[in-house]
Length: 388
Ligand SMILES: [Zn+2]
Ligand SMILES: [Zn+2]
View (cartoon, rainbow, N blue to C red):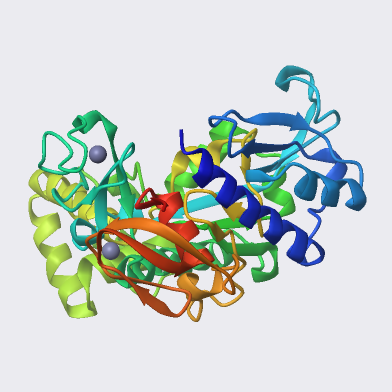
């Protein structure tokens, strides 16, 4: 199954690691980290608990294994190659994952497709990316073989970038992180990873990281935090627009202006019981609008192995690319690093036109096309194409 596609991708990925090896930074504290990887023909199996001694071994690891995906632990261990219980955990960087799919923008119904795994037929359909077809109209296969795949989308990326900016703001202003301690990467698919190497976070356990995630997402707040109480609420205790941290951000989002703030608060304190309930609702609304949409499971995890920066993502054939300037960063050019000189012939099926590497592609209706290798790889990774 998919043998020729795997061979094609493997040779392109191999060429990338060969050509770019000197530009891929060696992770710091190399010897204390756990590495892992997957292979194209390894049916998704993860090979992990690998320890790497030095820069030479690191290069050999990337070039020799022809990996489809490469991972590195956020954790530091005395014995990274041993089973989890014996590794002797020493700490972990804090990592945040912001994914456009979690933002559930209305545009997704236009660029998330249902793709039939066996025959590569792709279909637009329901907002969640499933198709309305009970069977594939290409091969007659069942709906269970349909996979959701997303194409590049500017509004989704803009929305994800806004979350990144919000997260950086909270980390720096509220939590004492300096901008130099944050490294931002495009995930290689539809989101961003922020790696935070801040000494005070390094030894935090799972529960503390979970609390930190709640803070960032503005979750689990009680009205008292923002000044409302059931018994004799004090007008002066309410969050104000000029305050720092979440109280200030909440006041701006919930009240809007000084005048509105005064009149809303007067209404709330007049009947505290009803006001308390109403205020809780105002806080929930504000949290949904201004809380940062991170994946809390990722931030909590102190033992995860993460996609390694500068490596390739086999879901797209794009790079987990550094974003020194998030606003200016265009993932669909900057993270396209596979061969653009050679071409490949594929049978492509994609009802939506999309941009990649500065060119436009599609729509294709089950047709044989000649594409630059990077675009062929992208479509094969997504499942919209197979080798001709
Ligand atoms: Zn099919
Ligand atoms: Zn979108």
